[in-house]
Image (cartoon, rainbow, N blue to C red; front, side, top):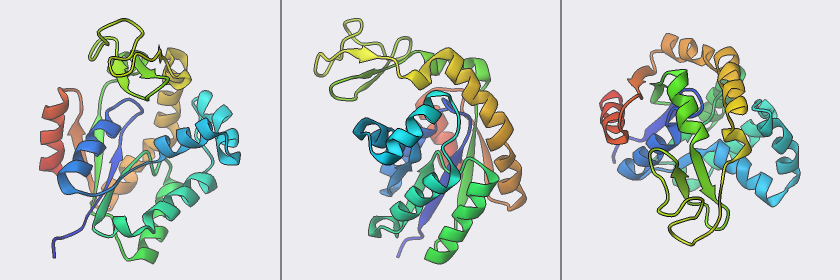
Length: 216
C-alpha cells in the first residue's frame, strides 16, 4: 500500500495555493480541500453559514474558527480522504492549527508536510486584482496572464465576467495585513515541528509545481 500524502499549503492570499493544490491533487489522486471554495459555495446558496460568512469575507477578515473547523472536520472524515488530502486555506491561525492537529489525531492521519509559498505583496496585488470569474459557468480568467478572447466575456459560455469583491485592491491589501498579523505565525508553528518547507512561488505555474514536488 502506498504511503498516504497529507499536505497543507500556507502563503498569503493570491500566492497560488489553490492552483498548486489542484495540481498536487491531480498528481497524487487525493482530494483538494479548499475552505475558500466551500465558504463561497455557502455564500452563493445563501445558507445560514453563507449569510454569516459573506459580510466577513467581503471585509477581507477571517471567518470564525468554530465555523471553519467544523466544515474541515466533516470533510476529512469522508472515505476519499483516507489515501491523503491537500488542504488549501486551512489552518489560518495557530488556534486552527491546534484544532486541525486534534482532528487528525482523532482520525489517525497525521500531517506529513506543510508547504509555504513565498510571493512578494506587490505581485499578489497584481495577480488578485486582475482575476475575473464567469457569472454563468464559474470559469476563471486574468486580465494580464489569461485574458478572455472577448473583453468581459467568457470564452466557454459567453457569460459576463466579473471581479469578486474579495479581489478588489483595498480588500486584497486588507487580507494581506490580516495574513501578516494572524496567519504568518503558522510558519514558525510548523517550522518548529519540522513539517515546514519554503517554496518560492514567484515563477511560472509549472516551475512552482516542480519546486512543490521537490519539497514534498
